[in-house]
Amino acid sequence: MNRGRPPAEPEALPNLDWLAYVTAGPLEALTRFAEGWVPETCQDPGMFAAAPWAVPGQLAVFYRPARHRPALFAVQNRLRLPRAWRAKNGGLIAFGDESQAVFTWLFDPSRPDPDVWIDQDGYEPRREHQRLSGFLLRFALYEAMMKGPTTRRRWPGSARRRRTSSPARGTAAKTAGEHAWWPSPGPWRVSCG
Image (cartoon, rainbow, N blue to C red):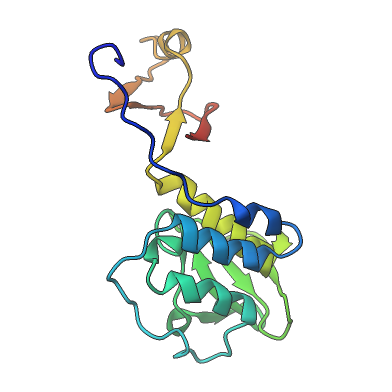
């Protein structure tokens, strides 16, 4: 492809200084990442303070750059605006939803850096791997990865596609643009660059 059309000069990438804060200060990393990597828009969902509960400090830090960067909280999965939070499961607050409504994220408003819980219908709530401050950084990075301009998904190679899409198996691999649609659970990788 590059023979017929030479590649464009790469644009300068935003600063990577946010990486220095990932472990020691995930909220600082989140703010620096958002301000450097996620473009602002004209959209303004309004004040985040209009909530029936006090907004934890970690979510206030998240919502400040998200106010003009809605891609931070509503691309693949969704973090709710505080006015849409709902009480659930013995005092926990539902503040986010997985993209296919399979589960909801919850937090305990009485804790300073609360645990994040996953509430999936039919199962007991289970704890996320990180507290709210670390969860919010991972959430923002995941959203940027899923819908960013440099996202690529690589599906199983064509040889495997031919083997697994045979008429005997009853599955068909379809191509949509650059990405192959894969109807069965199979390995896939996401890379940025």
